[in-house]
Length: 391
Length: 102
Image 1: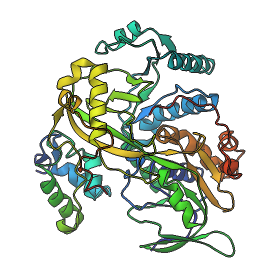
Image 2: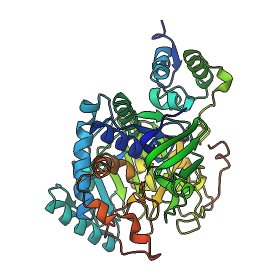
Image 3: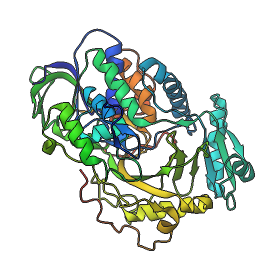
Image 4: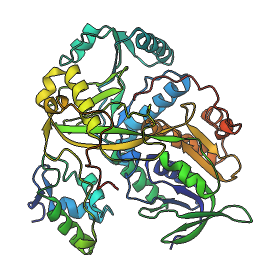
């Protein structure tokens, strides 16, 4: 049995829980319910590498991530939970001239925004991380204020703070049907009963198109499987998260000492090898590609043991930018998806602005830039110019 | 007493840790794993999963048989990167290890 609500949020990942928390923290006392078909952290929020960076190529993303970093750095104190945050920086390495130019462009923009990123030589990169074999690299850039977090405590922190403010969180409660009510709003069916909500926020990540279909809405996103592995814990040695532009390789050392990293795998389908389905199986092709790239980058790691690998879906929109706001043709149904593997780091700031938007404040510019109706004509619009993706 | 009973020897997770996670509402095995870190060390749960399941079920007042084990992840045993790097296998070839995925 679930009580009727003003706002039903579908998806108990970081985005859904953070929106619930921010909305509840604004007061007003309107009832908020978060429902999820699985346990908390089952989806991409529990499967990502925990990177939080300000090195982006559009002013929108740089400024959003500066604000998100600020929220992250105060999260432990304000929410009373350890997020294992470590600001060791992000080191981007480039082998090609094209990648070098891309880094140079983004560094100039980041500096204009006040992010202290700088271009460095491969030798300087090697001084920064002596384990790296820097031969073959043309350039690098490094921002000392980027960092990593342990993703799961964000969910527990947001969930606990939301629940303390009256938000009902129902995990293992899949929404199986959504009906539009004659007088507005929706009726959501779950195994725990049917309940009404005046509006729905679909925060289901790569699963968002499935949820939208329940109300007759369509989203143009497609999922892309990305895999990660974790090694045995090592003594702390790796300060920054290191990433190689050409291969999508990234690796960082968590506060537990494990190396955590991934790489883009040639899936035989140009990144669409799963044919639009969300698949979460582990592939040896990933493990071997990752092992080769990692040992090539840091030859001394050859004897380090892999203990675990897993997969999660990137959520890709046609133009590479996220999709937010009310879904065309479905009044009262709001989406927040298409974050292409960086939804976790964006969630603290996007959720804050999303709650303000739902509450009727003047919307942040992201709501115009990433509006859902830009795909309504069936054409793919020009992207906002972001090209600092990993993987 | 429960603070001195170690259930997961890789990660030093005690009976008290498991009871605490369940008391906070993290009662499924996947949730207990994430909250306590049990089963994330070298044995990947092979030594501790059953003991944790019994403890979590008791703490939640549930039948242990009603709890699902966490998804088993490759590799089967901790494996050196250099061995994996030497593996020759075409891209896109599955390992078959994803069968228990949820």
